[in-house]
Image (cartoon, rainbow, N blue to C red; front, side, top):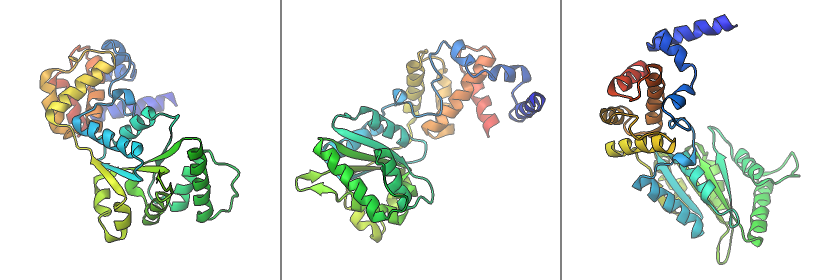
Length: 299
């Protein structure tokens, strides 16, 4: 088994063009952290709120979604190109909301998710139990409504953050409109925040969603980073990880910005692999040669 794994790894090295000696070094993913004296890898593919880089656009989206919650607006929406920080924004909101006043839950939508599955996911996140195995959509909605009223009696408002909202079916979208109607005469008792790809807002322009769209009082959009922001983003993440902002040389920023088109997920991918390769070569600075080699092997 060990031999087979070794052969597979050798084939991968040949494919991406990394010399065997350097490839063996790269197998230890913690080595760049030691080599560059970092506390953690600054470019991991995760949604750690600590690494949230607040561009003016990202800050605007955060403020708008927070205002939806604070002003008891029924539905808010944020759309963006994939990889520009929608999911990270949901984590920031989740971590910064006062749990004495709000009960935030996150629902991750998947393709072909039906409205019953959506309701059951909400119920699961709310911790509602003792429901019969066979239950109607009406019963599920009633169970959620009852929980919302219980929370309200205790001075707490439910906030549902829905990630990958572009996967929601038509039935599910109309169901969310129904949930958004749960209210007291003085205010809405629920805020739903939708996070989806740019095409989602185009889809919502269809006449069948007019009633739903009219409830979306606040809308925001994220965009890719500018060239200047790419440089700041890379330096910021290196600093947050406990390292120097000068790990990447000045000429690398323009190369990375052009190749990634300013999409943070793509920036992370190139920078992560560039750190690995630089450490394997014992280079204290990630220069344009390293970055170009990574880009070439990934094409």
